[in-house]
Amino acid sequence: MDPEKIREDFPILKRRINGKELVFLANASTTQKPKQVLNVMNEYYEEHNANPSTSNRLSTESKRIFEKSREKIADFIHADTDEIIFTKNATEAINLVAYAYKMKKKDEVITTAMEHHSNIVPWQMLEKEKKIRLRFLGLTENSLDLDELDSLMGKHTKLLAACHVSNVLGRENPVRQMAKIAHENDTLILVDAVQSVARMPINVKEIGCDFMAFSGHKMLGPQGIGCLYVKKGIMKELRPFVCGSVMKKVSKTSCEFLEGPERFEPGMQNIAGAIGFAAAIDYLDHIGMKNVQYHNEMLTDYALKHMKDIDGVKIYGAGHGIASFNVKQMQSYDVSGLMGDESIIISAGNHNCIPLMDYLDTNGVARMSTYIYNTKEDIDKFIERLKRVASLGTKRLLTKT
Image 1: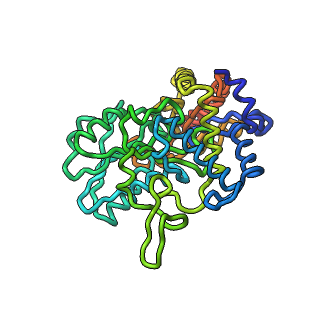
Image 2: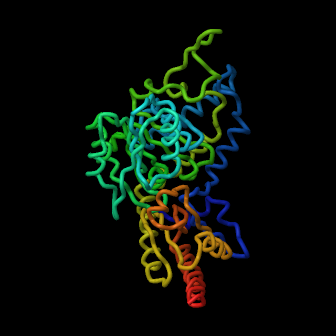
Image 3: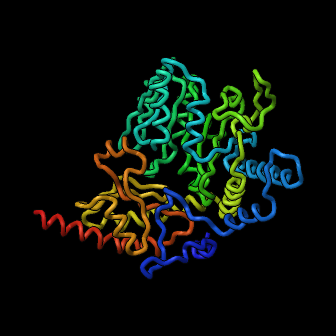
């Protein structure tokens, strides 16, 4: 894996801010797109664009390319093609489960305090609307408490919903063991794999999950396209989330839905997005996800080694290319802004994880996150700038004292 060669495929990395070359370290928020992805999407609109639900040569081509994209995405996570539903993003995928999986009063959903809002709010809405019970699995210093998980499981527990890798802490949760505990208690498990699918090899069969949500834009693909994996046999238990458009049968008094993924994909789909997503997977497959994982972990270790030596920097968590921190006497947005003045782009704020921020006793964190086109030189620039930003925080502290 040669990051310098990879960088040549990403046009945006040639951009300069304030005369300095762009250093993009906000990859847990979204990744940049290689020309291979941009080109294939443009080619679709120039040569194949048509409505796949109609009957003509172009629509047949469009349908074929769209379904080929589904096949590539399924192969990438070792799923079957008919287990993949296209969505706008992982948020919609989780909402699809919340509203399509039949739950009733007194049913229980277990989630964790480290979740993205997308894996908390839909369950809160069900708690209000259907009177289900939402329960939270506690956090420990290094992992989730699996003993507590076992004790939380009961006869009314219908679903366990948890992230695979925290988008703030970079922590990898033991989803295989969690799936085993869930199934031993006749409970289904949904895995929010937005960060993990982008950063490590994933095999849904080995994990044993029933649902998995992930997004294209976190892994070199376009924005506005995501997927929900549904284990075979479970999809027929889900009711349609959005209704209309192509159907199996419709009369004035009744209707009959299509089977399989199309049951949950009404209306015009983001075909170019799906094609771009598949091209991104081709790109990552060529590199190899084990190489992607190693590269991000190597850069994380390299960054942490230097971050720990900077006075005034507090590190909250790090792993899989993600490192969250704060600078004393500064808001995370100030840190991000000052880094951006030097063309170093990081993320800041609560990262849509306010319950986790409450647990960490902060209103937000700065977050550095790497991907395949980042280099040790990028980290060196980040560290150099962080030292100067931290010195400003120290001066503020001394002035107040």
